[in-house]
Image (cartoon, rainbow over all chains, first blue to last red; front, side):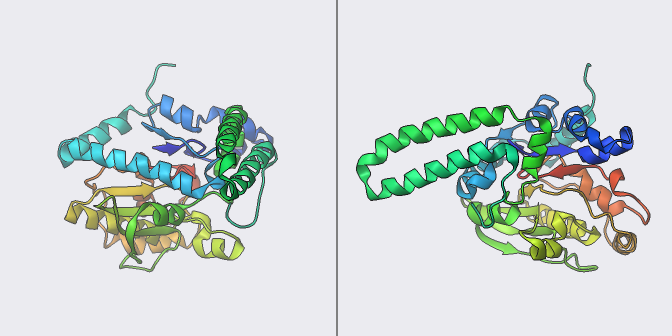
Length: 105
Length: 224
């Protein structure tokens, strides 16, 4: 799961721009190309859920942010109970990681 | 919320909107008659805030995810869980304040919690190393995963880190730990999608660079 305004990437946009294009001013482009925002991650199957944040972001309302995250975690734990044993989970995890990065352009 | 205000240029209109709603809410506590009107304004402001943020570019979202006021692991843990007991140390080298780990309950269910902890303010950030763990931090996480697997506890991980620490001394610390810790352990629960980075961090040898680590993430917390 990822928060609505969370990001996840192998490298920072700054690092990507300077290594790939040797140009630190291309940070914004790198941020877009890295597909690191929550909706991108969901689309690419890197996460299976985006957790909504309070209006203006989690830092505007800690209590509300925590309530939303708690609800999502409790739901995930419940789902976990109904899933098979450890082996199924490991197999599921393995398949998930194997499928990452493989998609039709 | 939470201490010194730090406002990114693009979030200014939304911050003002949220502040206005908060003022109204305080007013309404003294006068019940205002309640319905407040509700309407609140809904409107929330909708407007969402519309404004729907337009954010990826780079702006990155900046938001790095917002210094953004809640980190402990902010969530103290609000979401009961009876949190923090466990320190990796039983090999030392304790890493950039990773918080422990046991707690959520709605009666016992869980193991592991998460990155960023600091608030300069002093705290030095202590927490800006949420960038050293090898002992990853070994602490590993220790908790093992503990959880022994007791059949689900693991909740909150990922909130710029990267592992790119520190030259890190190599020696990693070597030292690797003699004791078996790699490739798999926990029972299915915590999140970023697990590879602690394992890699743990295996890393002297001279490795931070860009070779498996993941870079910021405020992806919480992943569960």
